[in-house]
Amino acid sequence: MSYNKIPSQINKMGLSLGAYALFHYLASLPEEINPGKTSVGNKFGVTRQTVAKWYKELEGYNIIKCYQKGGLNRLTKYEFTPPKTWVAK
Image (tube, rainbow, N blue to C red; front, side, top):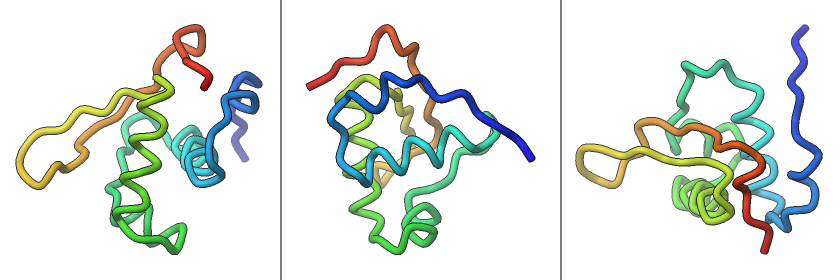
C-alpha cells in the first residue's frame, strides 16, 4: 500500500469535481506514468474531451504544466507545479 501527501491547499482552489478527481488520480501515479486522455476518460467513464477540459482547468490554476508535441493536440507529458505557484480563482 502506498500513500501520497496531497497539499491541503488543493481543497481551497475552487476546482470542479472532475478536475479535483483528475488531480488526485494523477498524484497517485508514479512520475513516469503519463496516461492519455482516452485512457483517463475510460477510467472515469467520460469522454476524451471532458478529460481535456479537466487538464485545461488544472493548467489554468497553474497546478500542472502540460507539454504537447505532434498533431491532434495530444498530451505527451505533464508535471505538477509547486503549490506556492498555484492560483486560486
